[in-house]
Every structure is written in C-alpha cells, then in structure tokens.
Amino acid sequence: MPSYRVTSTVGLLRPGTAPQDVLPEAVAVARAMTTVEAHDVGVVRGAARVTVRFEAAGDGEARRVAWAVLSRLDELAETSDGHLTRRYGNRWLPPRRPPG
Image 1 (cartoon, rainbow, N blue to C red):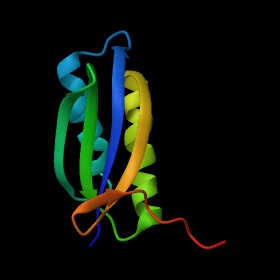
Image 2 (spheres, rainbow, N blue to C red):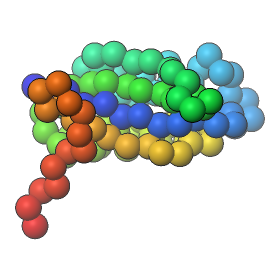
Image 3 (tube, helix red, strand yellow):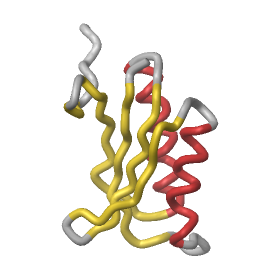
C-alpha cells in the first residue's frame, strides 16, 4: 500500500488549544481513517511543522485523509503551507493528477 504524508506549518494556537494537543489531535483524525505510520513536529525555518505519515489505497483516499488532518489543524491553530506528498521509491513527491 502506498505511503503518504501530510505536512503543515503551525502558527498561533487558537484559544483553548494547548501546544501538546496539536500533534495528537492531527494523528487521531488520520488514525480514524487509515493506518498511521509515523508522526512528528519539527522546526523548519523557525516555525513548527506537523507531519503525519500514513498508508492509503490510492491518491483519492490519501487526499481525503490529508484534508481531514489539515481541517483539524486549522481548527486548532493558524496554519499554512499544508500539502500532501506520496512516496515514490526514496523520494516524496506530489501525487500524480488523475487524467482528465
């Protein structure tokens, strides 16, 4: 099964959100939909970046999971740069667009 990851930069937290709750909430949304392989919060260029890596049967399913995670993160904090990538060999690239 293909591996995907959704990442987003997280800024100011919304009122009532504790910093330690942001990553577990994002992971819980993904875990309710699919198998979560890994998750992390890192600092990139001075900003917090949440990453959730997961399995999905295809790009459409992966997009649904990614949108759910990004929506939940947006409820918890100001977010930017949210995007989905798929693992192709040892590289992470955007999923291919369906023909159309």
